[in-house]
Length: 286
Ligand code: IPE
Ligand code: IPE
Ligand code: MG
Ligand code: MG
Ligand code: MG
Image: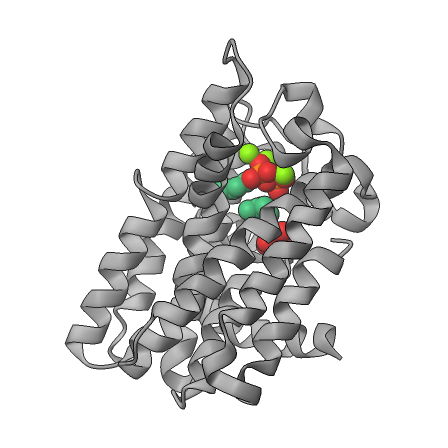
């Protein structure tokens, strides 16, 4: 079953990330807390893309852990009062609720740094590969990628006019898409192969993933999701659902899942697990 494979593979990335965290001191417990739980989809994409192209897990587990560290940092900050102001994440109180805002800021900062320690670990591969991965991860995480998307997301809450579809696509390509694209393509970079097909897969998958997140904010169950629902409409977020409504948003997500699967044609059956991941992102309940 796909869910079992996701659990097993993502545990590899999680273990690598946990090994890199401080074992003692004031940051140890809150950092460990922030990386616990979650589906681990981004690390899974790195590891499965790499495995498909013959890259050993001993190398791929470092970039897989790195992207999970950036993702966890983004969630800790996303939940803070100045951003989405959420109390629950992955079924537990958010870091700023469990500790305080200073701790949440510092956990995010430190997880971002640890990501670059991980991705440049000598086990990841030759220096050129490590530099390529570190540079592209910095771009994906920063002000042309995830941070840009988050800034557009926050700005949209107080915009006088609703965003257009193209503007929502650009917002989501940043906030969620950039890290998912990077994760999908990382295996090809590790293998020294053309990252084109996996990048196209990741782009379609990332957008489908965020549409599903927006649908779950309306239709999902807070207990199953481990986070509050109904927050997007309340905050005036610009989403596919706010612009198009639930039915058309779901239909768009289904088309994107087809597009993601089609992008894998050149890999044949080797890519079946990545095809299953594409179907999973819109079928999931959490
Ligand atoms: C939630 O991401 C935030 C978005 C980018 C939509 P995930 O749904 O992957 O969160 P976890 O890691 O499984 O908790
Ligand atoms: C979060 O998007 C994206 C990032 C953290 C980069 P959302 O704000 O929609 O995620 P949830 O719904 O809080 O998980
Ligand atoms: Mg947000
Ligand atoms: Mg949020
Ligand atoms: Mg959301």
